[in-house]
Length: 158
Image 1 (cartoon, rainbow, N blue to C red):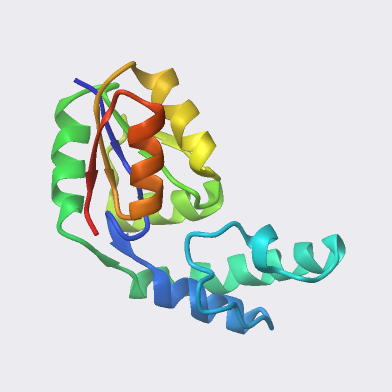
Image 2: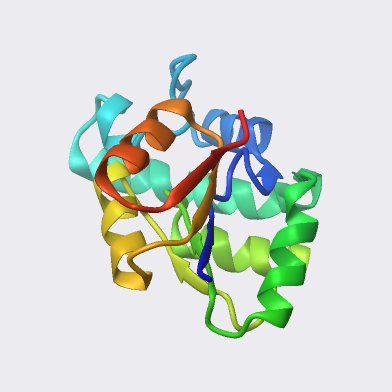
């Protein structure tokens, strides 16, 4: 059996840390920014976006210790340690953020990471992993999309 987990809102609660990190980077995100790609809501130029991303990443790194884990983190760790190559973390977060969080929360070493995902990317990641499995996702729209486009069982944690 294959298992996949979303990160933000499923394994950890990082909303406040992400929001504050953007504020520290000089940008006030819209209220509905969380879970949306930066490119969908940031209105600056590509050069400005690169500067904001770099500042946000530095601010986020300083806030990682304020992020709390959610109850499914325990299941993620148990499965990740016991089921070699059967657990995947599928997230819209950057690879850099995932590395920071993996260190902070002691993610199992054998878990595969698929980062920077949109909804379509999550479908592709699941289908590359296995034809079927169980995915834990906190976003209703993403869960509905995954149910429609894969044969995976999607457990919406919202």
